Picture (cartoon, rainbow, N blue to C red):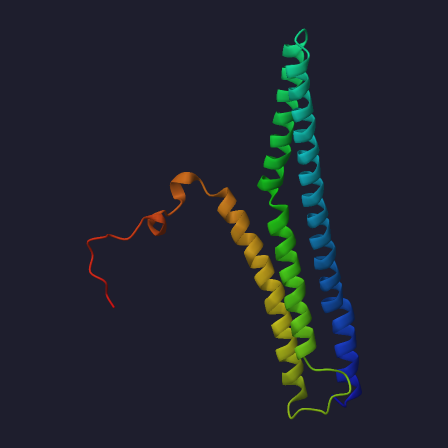
Length: 174
C-alpha cells in the first residue's frame, strides 16, 4: 500500500474497529473467566465448610441436628453456585470471546499492511480486508442471535429428529 490515503484508512480502521473489537473481546473473555473461577472457588469453599460441619455433627452428639442442618445448607449453597455458573456458561462465553478475538487477530495479520507495495486493485484489496473483518464480527452476532433464539424456543417447537438414533434395520447407503 503505497498511496497515503490507503495507509491512513488502514491505520484508522485498525485502530477504531479491529483493535477496539479485539480489546473488547479480550476484556469480556477475561471477565467471564474470572467469574468462572470465582464461582468454582466459592462452590469449593462451601463444600469444605459443609464437610467440616458434617464432621462436627458426628463429633458433637448434643447439637448433631444443628450441625447437620448447617452442613446441608452449605452443601445446597455450593450446589446453587455451581448451577449458576453452569447456567450462565462462563467458560463457554470466555472461549467464544477469545475465539472471536483470535479470528480478528488472524484477519488483521493476514490483511494488507501499511507500507506494502500497492496491489493492482487497492480499493478491492481494502474492501476484501474490511469484508473479512466484518464477516467475523457478523458471525459473532449471528452466533449470539442463534443462542438467544434457541433459548427462547418452547420445547414443543424444538426439532428432535436429529436426536433420534438411526434405524438399525436400515441398509447403509455406502
